[in-house]
Length: 241
Image (cartoon, rainbow, N blue to C red; front, top):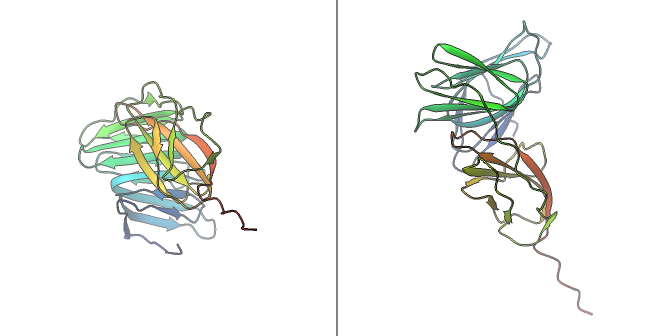
């Protein structure tokens, strides 16, 4: 918190680490666990708060909420070893898996120009695509629908947190994340499971937000379902009279 970054800086997160970056134009990026992100080029234009943003994701996962920009103005670009993404204003995820040399993008709002080797594709809201290093990007495919979290309880009374929800058609795994607020600037938990269940951490009592999504056979993560809940696992002991 309060760390200022400039062109040339690199951020690394550990297995339990995550950090949110906020740029001058109020665009935000959530850098998740086991990730490496370099600030290739950050340029502000006078007092306009317009920022030309070029980043490089060597490995890991990021989620960007990008303030809209004029068509002729600066872009927001993230490069990976397999593909690069360029946007004018949108909400999307980008990941790079060095083990499989594969980049993936999932678009939640707007559209993303996703370029693999010698080929660019437009990936629109509700779609995802992937690219292997040295190969063109794949055609976009629809993202999985949000899981059904209607049956989850508003109050959780046991720790560690364990919650289950109905299986989602097409999902081979699930990702669950827990944050203090629905902005998801800080992740208190980020885990995957082969089954539609959340096995979360032992958090202090308080108010939290859970978001869950399905992961398809291509490794693309689907649309989020959100569930606010109160953890009340340690009730006050009764007063002795």
